[in-house]
Length: 177
Length: 177
Image 1 (cartoon, helix red, strand yellow):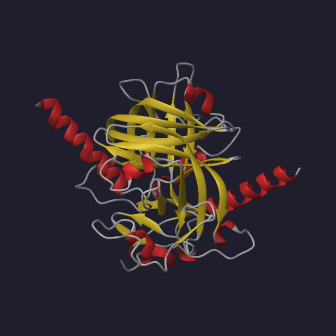
Image 2: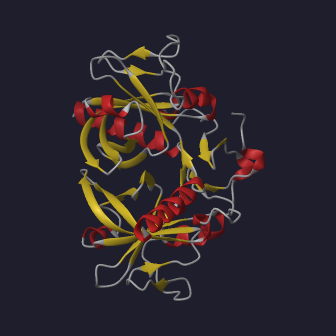
């Protein structure tokens, strides 16, 4: 009983700490062959640049996770503030996330892509690491698109998730450093 | 030759895409027994809440990575804008990151902690996943401290790394949603 209470308190502290920790926003899509899934994730991070490698975590509570676990490739979409609607789409339960066919397309290799994403990375799942209630995926990028991947184009305002709200950044948010 | 050029272009696109992708900022410390190391990381993410589980990536280019790979426990510090100096400390090469002994302390379990961090998670490394030039670490939290882990206290302004600059968020950065 004491242990359960201590664990619950540890979990509460952890959830609070990460609610106060800002994150970029991504949508991960996959299709193991029986239809596409899309999931909003704030866990996407860059692991390695050469070859391009990203990681993200998928909770067992996410409806997309079983399909991700059966997939060999995914598309990781990095979102700007202009794609807040995609972030919400991939985070809303009980809807058909592919109902609006104007939002998505298939790459020649078959994967589902939201073309308007600021950047997207099509890649192969090269490793997974299981936790109790989630799985960490490692993905090696095979193709990268979107205008945030082009160093010669101006960037869109970024999208940040923090304290259960959506934010953006600009010249006025910069701090000395 | 063509392949090398294509790979280089893929890496450039990837680096550009992540430069445009905002991230929270953390410092990871470890001490495998022969002295502490500290590394600033923008790759820390929450994997699971129960038990509390985080992941982060460490590049082979980081001076701290060999020590991390020999450690069984780490402390992951989640930083607010008030700890920008710690973010810079863990990102500056060629200095003794522990020269200022007023900044750090040892937990009763032996790990090095920057007590002023908005939140810190002491945990055990429960898995690693190697990439070519980096390693992904998974850590289960055993102890959590800092005032961002306390739901009854006001949060400090967050710290965001974006486009090679430091930012914070506030009421004016929130966007509709």
